[in-house]
Amino acid sequence: MDKSKEELLKEITQASFAVNDLTLYLDTHPNDMEALKMFDQCKQQRKDAMKQFTEKYEPLCIDDVEAGASSWAWNNAPVPWEGGVC
Amino acid sequence: MWNYEKRLQFPVNIKTPCPKTATLIITQFGGPDGELAASMRYLSQRYSMPYKEVGGLLTDIGTEELAHMEMICAIVHQLTRNLTEEQLKTDGFDTYYVDHTTACWPTAAAGIPFNACEFQSKGDCITDLTEDLAAEQKARTTYDNILRVVKDPDVLAPIRFLRAREVVHFQRFGEALRSVQEKLDFKNFYAFNPEIDKKFMA
Figure (cartoon, rainbow over the protein chains, first blue to last red):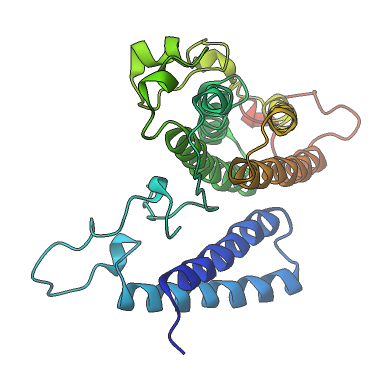
């Protein structure tokens, strides 16, 4: 089933939060194997969700701006502070 | 170097504008314990930090604080969107409005503009990390105070998230301070300052 924009953005938000929080934890616990494994999983989830979002909607990161486009897509996304999908 | 990601760290979707609430929340943008001061504090302290894992933590938390600043500004912005003329005259917001219309400008709730004196970058890792621990607690108290007076669930959800992050950052800074102390003379942590007395360092 196709995921809606809201669902995909929620996945990005959740996976990215896990990545952020684990980053801080690993900064002070660099040898915690369980956290390292969790970091890899969450990072992959974030990557997959970002890829799906970019392909269906618009780029959230400059690296995801599509090559060979006929117009500049970077500013097509709504600004995050207006609410809505984010 | 930083890259921008076009999303908020936690969603902010406020349906009902309330300029009065905006005048309180704005303190976490430009107030003494706000997110702007937090980010500038950690990002400024990094350069003289002699331990790279602690410098890394300052970078990562300082970066997250920028995302928190963006959330706070989004809350303030959404609370002051599409105001009626009557709402512009809201007690406490009217004085902000004449100077800034409905733009975001860093100020404390009581009207004191943002000032770099609200944070310290002291060049002594025990001093700086102790300041960081206090800063996280002061921000947590500010969020507790906001939670006590604001009732709109659309505002409360992101504020609760931000409050929880203060607690996590406090924990991480505590661990960083402990790791710094482990590297120092356990009989006298203050025998030398590792940020400047390099000749004493192993």
